[in-house]
Length: 364
Ligand SMILES: Cc1ncc(COP(=O)(O)O)c(C=O)c1O
Image (cartoon, rainbow, N blue to C red; front, top):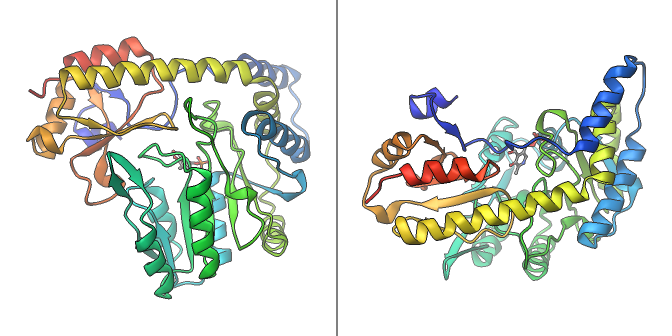
């Protein structure tokens, strides 16, 4: 992959959204226990997973969820793919707020739906939803559903309660369903609060909430969870998942997830502290050494979103400078064609390595 993006492989892979840290000890212990036991007969227990997730959200985010309203699916993207098919028809428009996680576009087009863009606006150096544009697009009749990214990958916004209220009100007025991808919900920096679409009772809205993938670095051993307070929608989705036997999961994922959500608090607190230190270091390095690079305020996620436009370098020249410093970032045009001179960086890596790479970066 690095070769196809950068034409080289000797780079630090800061482009992929996973972690370079060992997972929490309780997760390792659970996986060891299962491996040593050496028996993998029929053993499904999604109910205990839902209980662990419910307790976690109450404890960490003050969000009350009901375990009866979860449906387990193999992954978050599987969940979104399924919901697009349930909530819309071929040819319908599904709105995304660009720049946004590139797989959304693929999920929409491969389901034969149309991608409708509502670009985020930058106001006072901060990304905002464009409510005027949303109102116009919703009223046009071309949009049936939208995929919300909360916290937003790659721009790092954690949508506030009032921002979500406003969005839900607009969506309800035009009968638009919101599919809310909340996979990054636990990577929240101090001063910010995660709010979920799962808290809204009115409307046809649904969350992908509770995946431990990003929170605990369990990308290859996690499931996705669909949650909705809309009973009719919930039953419909559950019936489809049941009919395809998609909800089984496996023992490794099940027990690793329970261990993560019931015994992972301390590990996550340390991670957040570490990420916060890393963020501060990068921010002050950029301000002092490469001030023409703009780093947007990061409220959540372990991604940072950098704009190189003011450096006077073309995207190819920026790529070459990054390559020279052995920094492998995700090109901004993955997230939106108009963001050629933006790059996303995953900061969930050892700080010493990040420092070494940044110190090599020559853009002046
Ligand atoms: C916003 C978002 N959703 C979903 C995923 C992937 O989820 P999963 O691997 O569970 O399908 C990612 C991974 O980067 C992501 O950033």
